[in-house]
Structure formats: C-alpha cells, structure tokens
Length: 116
Ligand code: HEC
Image 1: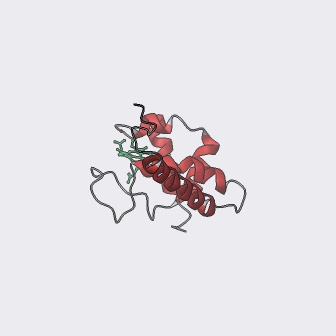
Image 2 (image 1 turned 30 degrees about the vertical axis):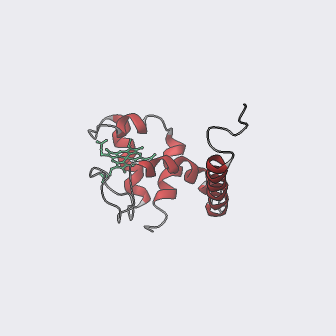
Image 3 (image 1 turned 120 degrees about the vertical axis):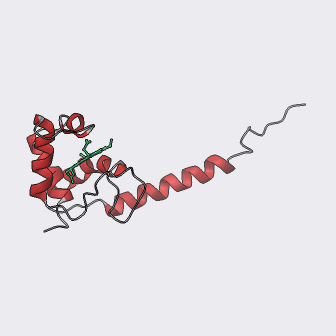
C-alpha cells in the first residue's frame, strides 16, 4: 500500500517556513532605505557586519564591540587600519580587504548615520 504523504506530513513544515521567509522578505523590502544615492548600497554592504557586531543591547557575542553610536569617520578609519595591517586583528583585516575605498565610505556612511 502506498502512502502519498511526504516525510514532512504534507506542506506543514515547509509551508510554515516559506511563510516566514516571505514575511522576512517583506520586512526587508520595507526597511531598505531608498534615499540618497549610495545609502542603499551602504546598507547592503553592511548587512553582513551585524552577524558579528550585535546591537549594544545584545550580549553573548563573545565581546565583539558594537558598532552602534560610532561615527562614520571612526568606522572608515578603523576599516582602513585593519586593511593595511596598522591595527592588529583576528578577522577584521581579512574582512576589510574585501572592500575597496568607495565601499568602505558607503559602509561607514551607512553605519555611522545614527551617530551624526
Ligand atoms: C566574523 C565576524 C565579524 C564580521 C562579519 C565583521 N566584524 Fe568587525 N570585528 C570583529 C572582531 C572579532 C573585531 C575585533 C578585531 C579583530 O579581532 O578582528 C572587530 C572589530 C571591528 C571594528 C573596530 C571596533 C572597535 O571598537 O575598535 C570595526 C569598526 C568593525 N569591526 C567594523 C566592521 C564592519 C563595518 C563590518 C562589515 C563590513 C564588520 N566589522 C564585520 C568581527 C567581525
């Protein structure tokens, strides 16, 4: 006798998952800034930073400093120092080398926007 149900019991599991992905995509679409030129790009380039640099209020990320409240000038200078090796780092040197000058400026402008 054949059972046509999948191992996941129909679409229950995946249906719920897909719904959540759709909601997240909608939220991202609403939150993505569409203002001055360069801001959207800075936001896109900065999303990966949040994986390690949690907001100041969060704990448990192994002591990685929060980027909240840091000015654009600080962030740009820090990235360039990591890139050149002037600042010692475990991971930031490698990460900073992945961005060119324009991208560092776009990231710094986006992340530093709240500090101004
Ligand atoms: C894999 C985790 C990780 C990611 C992703 C990451 N960082 Fe970092 N960041 C660190 C760690 C760890 C340090 C401390 C220096 C070190 O050891 O590399 C740091 C330090 C910094 C500092 C210096 C902060 C201070 O107070 O001195 C800045 C600025 C910074 N990161 C910016 C960024 C930006 C901008 C991005 C995204 C483009 C980013 N980081 C992505 C882990 C990360």
